Image 1 (cartoon, rainbow, N blue to C red):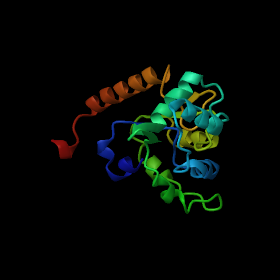
Image 2 (cartoon, rainbow, N blue to C red; image 1 turned 90 degrees about the vertical axis):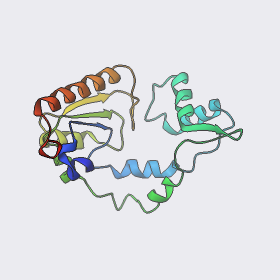
Image 3 (tube, one colour; image 1 turned 60 degrees about the horizontal axis):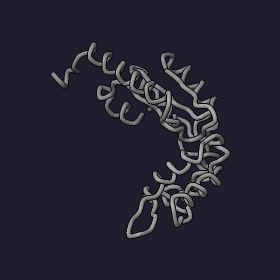
Image 4 (tube, rainbow, N blue to C red; image 1 turned 180 degrees about the horizontal axis):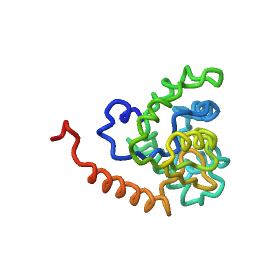
Length: 187
């Protein structure tokens, strides 16, 4: 959304993966509660148990193999121990965020996507991107494509039927972009 606002000609389309111009404060508070604070598991199996305990409400139907895969994406082995794969300093970015002071909305930036195809992928259990926000997005961008992933929260897994859907969407953006031709700056 920010790239579209800064340089609209750089965009052929956008996939918004469980995010939109309005972020639900409840979800931010939930994320703030664990980012940079996860226990250090002794094994990926223990890591899977930690994640299942934290996120079972958002992802009630994940299999043990999927929880193990999530653990293997959340931690990596470094010097014989499991350490987070993400920057734990992200917690400091979230330190001042609270439920009473939600982050600013990005409706103007979203509106900058009006001239390109947009695909929104939302987890049905998401507490970051609400169904009401998606409906408002669809009202502002009538050609917006939308898929909701059942039994998943923020962020829904990019697997199964979602992968070919994204591939087809991106291919359609390439075709549309090719029909438009180069911008004056590219000539």
